[in-house]
Amino acid sequence: MRIALSIAGSDPTGGAGLQADVQVFRAFGLHGAAIPTALTIQDSSRVHRVLPVFPSLILEQIRGLLADITPNAIKIGMLASDDVVRNVTLALGQLEPDVPVLIDPVLAASDGTRLLEQRAWPALRGLMHGCRLVTPNLPEAQLLSEEDVSTRSGCEAAARIFIGDFGARAVLIKGGHREGDVADLLAVASDNDSDNEDAPELKWLEAEPIEIESPGVHGTGCALSSAIAAGMALGRPLEQSVLDGRRFVREAIRLSERVGKGSRFLVLPGAAT
Ligand code: PLP
Image (cartoon, rainbow, N blue to C red; front, top):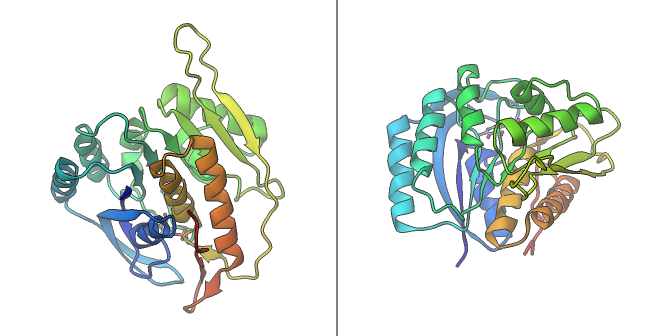
């Protein structure tokens, strides 16, 4: 049995967050383990309230789980507060170094509600050190790198900061928020750490905008990062996991349905293995 762990916020609608992650893991044939970092009160229209889980409780949950089970990959999503980020960082200190950790640096929901307090940003940047992949959308890439990501060259500069300054081994800057050009940038750190050949390898993954009727789809970022983590848990190489994850979410968006009064929900394609 292969296991993926999500450390993320709870979304009671099941459209995003921890509940969505576990459904994505299942679609890839994985067992999903799940540690909540925050409770949210939200419906399909918006997030009403955010309540971080006691940081010590998160620390104990991660330590307890890792003492017993070694996941094949870990996805980290919404972390809510500075204390939560610090305790997750502390707890993952005991993790075996070959377990891939993927961070979706969730800062805010689509409705603008903050899902991570701003004073936690430095700790979040610190958590990225050594992680296998970070998956910011454009606003997150801009806020965390402090680069203007409105152009492709600006995105490339931001990617170099995620890798060179924050120490991530790879970053996927998602282009979905860009007008017209929605290509994603995948940057992977060079393995060659012997001299100053440290420029990351940059690859633009072209994409067509997806035409869907309004309203928008909820939880696409969560689903993409958990689908990529699922690929990694299955032992697939990074780039293949990214391409498979994008295809999976694209299809889930195409199939999406309106179940409540607000956003559409992803319909996960079957047999994603
Ligand atoms: N709730 C939780 C727990 C999340 O992690 C996220 C996004 O990461 C959201 C809500 C927001 O989802 P959306 O961007 O679709 O509004």
